[in-house]
Image 1 (tube, rainbow, N blue to C red):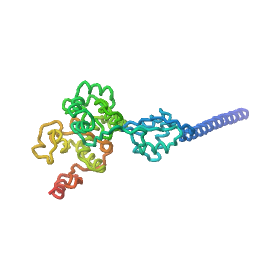
Image 2: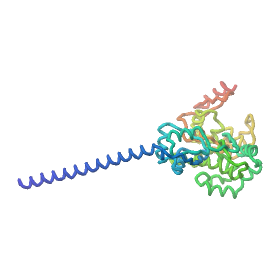
Image 3: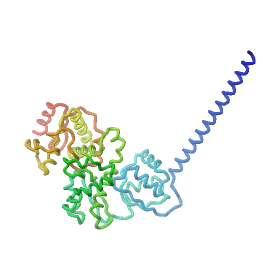
Image 4: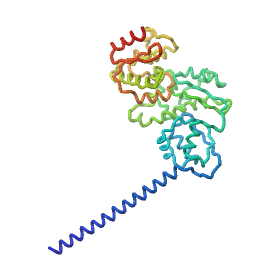
Length: 363
């Protein structure tokens, strides 16, 4: 018995030694991995080649997010690791990078690269620019294009409504353009899909297709940033841009967009019509300073006074602020809102409170 106890004691010691060795090996591996990771990150924060003065031409497309910008810079050899650059900019709370064509070198530090992208120091000036403000319809964008290019508004509208061209675009932009835009109730398939921004063009007479695809590319880039949250919320891109277009037409300030978004969501949750005047004006097809009661009764798929839920599609081009607010609404119990004569919005939880606001701010 004594011998067996000695044997067991020896086995326990052996097991402890093995466990100790394994633990030590694991610690060494973790230490090596940590040290290697630290060295890798430190190296990635340094210039690719401090001695290089060779200019590298880099194009940052309109509407590019930090993920795309980081990938472009890594592909061009300006930075060592796209992920490290992305996290570095987020850590330093850097944003508002400008699209354009840049002449960068591998000797630039990350801070120098960031400063260049923020100030928009391009190595060649555009021949001309086209500015598309937020909240424009396709008809209005057509007028902008006509004023800045050789293409007439009629030619622009003919192209953006051409069925063959639209089918081609669906293939070219599968994540942005889906079968949703082919709904028979939709006035224009591409309404709300041309991103509002200032676009530089580097040739005197770009083709109409190039102009249209440039705007679609920007919207595609913006929307791709929200892919994860769209999947989480089970929203389609079409629903997002439709909702955002309503905010763009109704709101004046960022906070208004988030609060109005909550009103719309609250109404849809209880099956209450959105009752937003811009959809009535879009249904009529012309601008009016004042929407009449008879206008509210027009039988049209876009009229949110007679139809519940969202209209068939966007009614205008929404900017990033409205798109963001559509996915990040305020938490409220509001069901009503109105804008006073100065354009300030006032919100209410009940109809009686809404009537009081009308009496107070509009009478």
